[in-house]
Image (cartoon, rainbow, N blue to C red; front, side, top):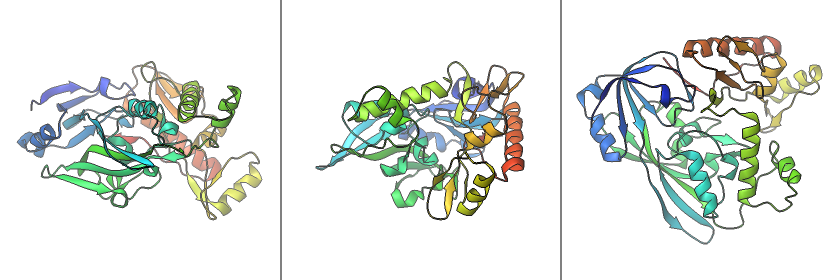
Length: 340
């Protein structure tokens, strides 16, 4: 394995921020990764693992080793009458996986279409959209332990999935690199979820009364493209903040003051409030600061119009957090991982 020195990370993060890694390596095989982790330089420096770079904000140059996970692979490893289990390399592109599963008439991922990033990052973040999270189809994953290069298997319970979180963001943070993910997908009688967001309206506008998983995927793609800027054209990381979860009593009190405040019941005691609505009510949608700002079509998306640095974006995010807290008494937290 070869380590590159002073390597630009601009093309490895979807914000398009120009920062540099002291050392950089790209791995394509589990064995390469295990070999890399035994190198003295890697053992003696801070480590940052990148997938698609779609969920990070680089605030400064990284004074350590950046590993780009490009481990590939796709195979059906098991099946029964209802399900097929597919094992996918951690470096595979997430949306391409979704498209392939739909081509093979495997259901469960269609609502997660067009989410940027790689397969390896998906369980770490417990990615979700339009009423579906990866934990709903997750079976197990394999991950290499950074400390000694050993390969470990984690089942559903081991991962401790939570809203946009897992054990890999809490007690095992920065301890493992996910090399593969195995998902359990339906072969028939797919469980279609169309009641979240604008999916149902989009299907109705196309006169689709009995949608297939491909129809749902197409609807999700159309919705996301209408709201979210393409990172290849405008630097962004998709949704910057998580939707806050507040008590049902706090929500009821706020709704007395803000009649049109939306909320989604999680259970009897908790309500999820759309962060985009909170941010928009504070006047941030379409706001610009020099070469960065909040996207005009979606208040959750912070954008780099070109030349902004990570600290610029972070200071904007902090201003948004402060105004939401002052207006609503609700704390919103980044979904994006901060580096530096």
